[in-house]
Length: 113
Length: 117
Image (cartoon, rainbow over all chains, first blue to last red; front, side, top):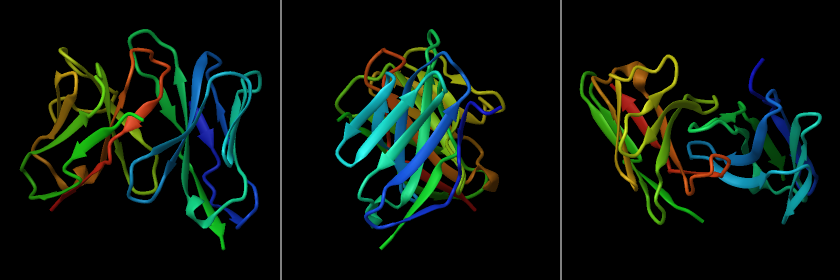
């Protein structure tokens, strides 16, 4: 079982719609959760971080975390063509003296004008 | 937010040569930096964890003699691809965490695209 799993997509939504991206993780000891956006040929850019159960909103983005079900999601409201990118889910396990940030394979989102 | 700079952004070299990539944290001290590689349409693969003042920790399957990592200061880590071959062609990305908390967010460099002819 992979540490972090995402639907690779591609996910296509019309402009103005809500895009919903999902991610599940395997380790219940995971502490922090991140969504990164990566444009083709560029490095990842942090979009959202979430550490506790529930919703966290930042502009058009909402991250949702459910530790009991071991999933984290990202909602993008009023999707724009500029949101077209690959979205990477990353999960950090707390282990002493080590980085354990595991990335999913990413979901490619296309927003159709 | 924290800024991580990576150089060069693109490099083309002949097979058998060595290539050095630099990763700098510009406005914070990074005791730990991380090196990833990414193949087209694939996710990031952690290669190694670079620790300031000590040896890097390599992930399973990554040759430490092939990918030399030096973290000489709190703001600079370097990755040297030694005796590069075409299969080493990839997108190499570094990242750094701005604090000691291992749960903190990572900031990524711009990436370095290596092409080995």
